[in-house]
Length: 449
Image 1 (cartoon, rainbow, N blue to C red):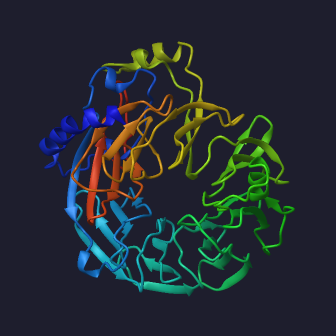
Image 2: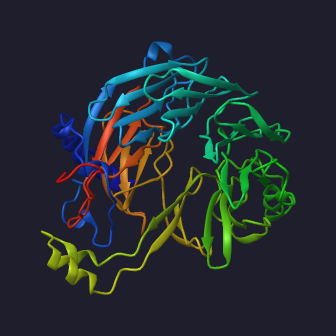
């Protein structure tokens, strides 16, 4: 991270000069961009700025767990941010200025990314007290509380009026979103011994619920009744075989499966801490590919960029005529990169089709958050060195900003604005400048914004 250290002084100065900006504009909350002609070629070190900084959580309510994990959820139309805290609360705050709208108290730290449902205008979230909650988004009023046997730190998935989620004791559950009543559950005996903190969440595709467990098993269940739809897929056994019979120290699969499609068909992608990164056939669980070199992975993110006109063709003031000329040029092809974050081996960019490594970068000591796509790049929080904007195409550092706080929480992004909570309980709003030529889309119901 020599490049990161060189950026620290400049980034802090930029942050200090822009810390007073508190307005969230229409353009800033919408859109995406691309890194074909990297922004830092034209404005090195100036792509990020702090637009919001406010004290949120109460350190006097924090006992034993001093890290803020999880990730916020954003309501772009209501201009609200929902974020959990180690002080046992879920907060709803105003996106423009960070003012607290309401706070809901639980019996444990809230280290789970909330799920905001705009249709019903409610928020679902888990707590370390072992419960999943449903509250009204406008007031924080409790609708129901569903108790489980262990902490819930991964967000639920809402599909067809049913919530699918997991907890830290290797249980996957389906409950009715309206009533909070249990529909079905499946449980595996947790692997006793040394484990990596956290647990895999649930994902839904093809009428199946996918998840993974601390004993190194990946599984698919029928959405309707929870019946097993795969034969037992034990990735830990493959890890032991690759280690010439030596039992792996860590068996965990803590990454939530990512459903996607590659040339060979529908797959899910996930990472075994000891065995590497896998793509498994979505219907059978058979291996499509594996990269055994990428070990120690705790977070997986699939970065995708659609096909678009060359960036040089749309730079500058855009008109109908310039857009027409750009549309006639050969388009830049769509790109995808599977990003794997590992405390052992660094940050990797993998080819989703084959699992082959495209690039690898060392990570700073002390840990990093999951990489989060924003404005054509990816944003990563580091425990000791602040926030960094990286190119997903080669892992290069675009910009860095050190606001004087440590991070364990992954940022949440909408358009060009990212929100995160520092370990000291400060809510930060970070603006990422898009590449030149970007034309943001107007918000529904707003003209000329």
